[in-house]
Image (cartoon, rainbow, N blue to C red):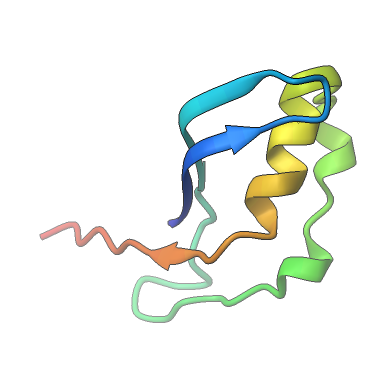
Length: 73
């Protein structure tokens, strides 16, 4: 999982979102290895986010990302 967070996200129409967070979950290639996909290869157009949500995603994608790992025991 990769997470992006902005404490105060200002959009072009003057709307301010407090605590905007985007979490991207991708499957691994196998049980033991991780697949790293370049951020440029992500196709967000297929998800149909328009308006303020689409703009928020575009701004959050450009933020620093944090890697979160989950282990299934």
